[in-house]
Image 1 (cartoon, rainbow over the protein chains, first blue to last red):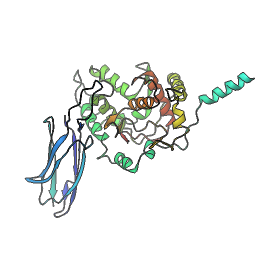
Image 2 (image 1 turned 135 degrees about the horizontal axis):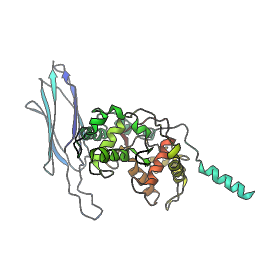
Image 3 (image 1 turned 180 degrees about the vertical axis):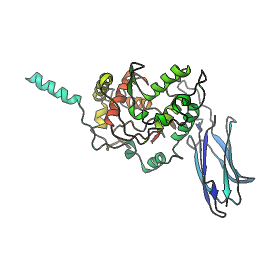
Image 4 (image 1 turned 90 degrees about the horizontal axis):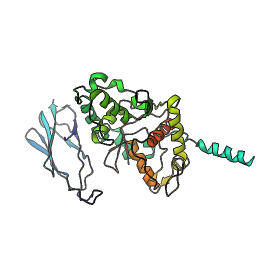
Length: 106
Length: 251
């Protein structure tokens, strides 16, 4: 089960910047680790993450093996209009995750 | 006379010098780690707390939920973590919070045992421990718990491993100094279960204690063993009055 937390101010004045914070629970296996019996643990990281506000893509991130487990992202956006902020991601195993929050521009 | 003097020395060695003033774990962490723990959103341990909340409200094997008896918001669990480990009359032995949750699950929910250190067990423990955040540690070391307390204290001062060190040598006598690049803490268990950056995961106090035993190249007691429970009780008594900070963040 993909667990994530998304934090954004629910209401923002037009033209004002708002901080978006995101925490995704994921082991971010680098592929370099081995089990105690010598078997390699296959690489499994969140390889792409997209954040959209309505139909507009506001952030796209591609991660590799250098990102720590449970990645934390923080970025600022200036929402042009009210809408749903949706973050979607997919990992190397094909497991998808999604978290959403509503922003009201006043 | 010589025998008596030797005996007196041994008796003094039994009661290690306690750290003063008491300093909680974050005081020995870097500012960024401290900031990460203080930020309830960025603290990765809160992911386990959130997951624990889901499990709390999910039905067990017989359909009963934790929330049915204890309330959905678990406010009734406030202060519970500060009193553990404790001698549980219904179990007839010393138990830590993880063991107590496990006993409750099997007794009232008929749920299959959760392995110690499993994600679900850690999530439930983090969820319950989080309710006690800010409350002072107040364990009981009297009555039936006394024996375990004495045992914990003797483990605390016993030299172990190839490095031949006891807990007291670092955490009472050399706290605030460094072990290679790492500051030596006073060894208070108030932040556990904690997210340890080295592990990239939340982990229990017993896992951390086992890492300490590994560090001095000693035999590691099993997680949940009587030895570690006794040691945990002694550590909690040393930390008496310090606030519970679970889920903590440690390097």
